[in-house]
Image 1 (tube, rainbow, N blue to C red):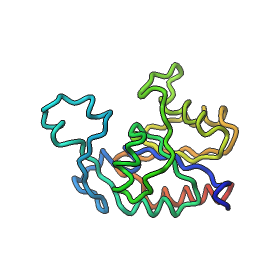
Image 2: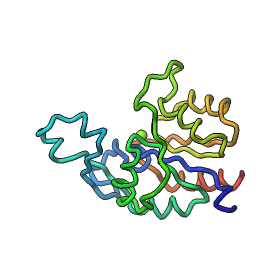
Image 3: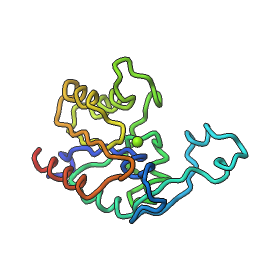
Length: 179
Ligand SMILES: [Mg+2]
């Protein structure tokens, strides 16, 4: 498979890469970072403890090499937008210049109950085959993509307690092979 024909792998940060609901304070393989993304900072009270400390994010430095080893072209599909390249990529070991989906509106309410990312993401993919890893995907989104996207798609819901696991990498690899 040449790079040009590779499917896209659209990456969410909170859930798949940062297992924010993990039970353990230090999940195995993960390191803890305190980051200050603009979207988060805007919601904090200036001078508060959270504002000073930053947002706790756990990242697994093994994930980057595992992701770049997959037969996909990676892109960010996250509220972190360009800050995924500057703040998340170094912690997971990904290149800092991946394409970024720029959302028209964050957390927009969808009239049909879709996840707010789904419509703009399908538009961005523009018919290219894609896999999408996110903790907020529902069956409604899977149905929407099946009927509105002119190409193969794999929507993989990742539990925010566990983040991306070996089995998810295997699922992605197998799906790409079948294209
Ligand atoms: Mg998420």
